[in-house]
Image 1 (cartoon, rainbow, N blue to C red):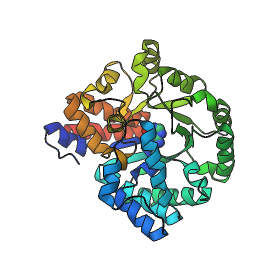
Image 2 (cartoon, rainbow, N blue to C red):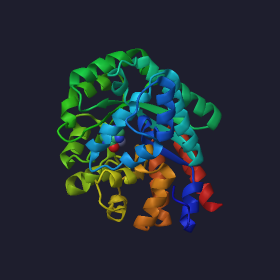
Image 3 (tube, helix red, strand yellow):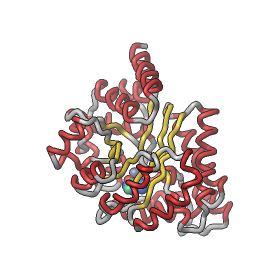
Image 4 (cartoon, helix red, strand yellow):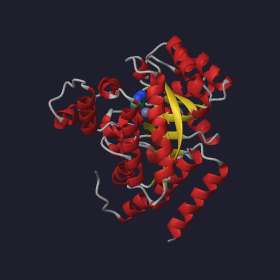
Length: 340
Ligand code: HPA
Ligand code: ZN
């Protein structure tokens, strides 16, 4: 946790916010990992919570994913998924998040013999309770794991059929290099026919060409991460012209060595290029912090101005899948908070 120090830090914590790039399985804190392991009789390869935290030293995306999938093995019952999601929503409330669009990975669970319905129902029940009790609106995005086959993706879509009315969109995550968006063009075309809007991780570790593919072949409405877009001037022009959102995750980029130092992150450059970039926490239990911690760390490392901070937060509402009326409401709330 970063303690607010700078006058702008108070503004960061005070403003209403939305989060658009959060893997619910990545919000599994070590304490809950141990509690669920005990509840379900699952053996963990760690002595205690400190040993888990000490293991969170990553040199690239894959080294994180290996632990992330292993950690998810403690999630067995619908109540486990409910508890996981509820714990995230309490953190979100503390950060003044008023709307969240979360990812989940059904294949991580079905591959272990956990029925599609178990993860889906647990997560969604908590999201509905969060809306009713905490006032946090939500969208639920089902992600396909790109290291698995197209066939596995189609099988997952088939399992999702009874739930499609409650799934707001589809995403693409997991090991990026060697698994370009083109691998899933037919699957995403089928999702589009079914009325599911798409997003995709691209340009985190993968090259700018993966971002072009996500846009042109998957019809991705947002790009998750996308920070490598700055290697391609034509691409940056297009992203700016079409206001295609980039759901940037700064502490994730630092932990996974996408950048070596937060001070070298291109977040300000993205804003200066007129891109609809905003800050998100990705897998906060693994990367050292939730949304406010990400914003506070960027404020300090990049010396963000008030205008830049407000732009990031406004961009997040603009990029969300809230209705036009809801977006106008929250943009107005931001203006009022700034005037207060
Ligand atoms: N990248 C790709 N896949 C993921 C990530 C990420 O940052 N987090 C969880 N799955
Ligand atoms: Zn992600």
